[in-house]
Image 1: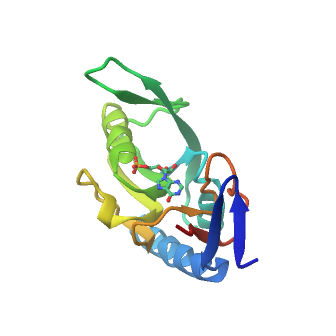
Image 2: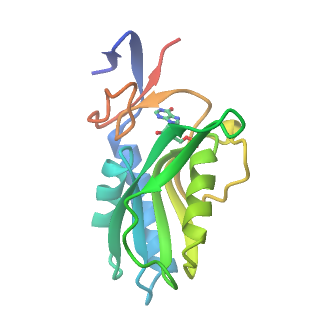
Length: 178
Ligand code: IMP
């Protein structure tokens, strides 16, 4: 399939699965090297991270734990706008090395919120592993230590990422045709 239609939008293939897997393997090697002798907790951010998390974890040969969280959006007051709350954090994270697993860092606001929330639990360290990074869109400084693929400012779907709920199952990455 070189193009797909999801809802009202057409998408064309932009990154094939083989290339994604190659870059995930590279990230896994970096994590294996950096966390040797440690026991990090990999904390996946649902829903988008599920495919990246599975492929990354299969390639880790260090001792590690895995857990998942979600971010709920709700409308705050007019002054605070939309606030995202991290839900599902049950583990004790004090003194632990955390690696957040995210599908894509776009404006960086989601990761900024995660870092704020996790920081209150006094972990030993927090790093971010993201499948995609759109540097042109960053609004806040977020350090993504492990990034598989850097992409231009285009809306993409597939490999866990969706357009209004559709497209998460696609094994390749597709970009919107405008
Ligand atoms: P941020 O807070 O702007 O960095 O947004 C991060 C979230 O926005 C991601 O976890 C995705 O759910 C969503 N997102 C950002 N860009 C895209 C895209 O190109 N396709 C699908 N979802 C996206």
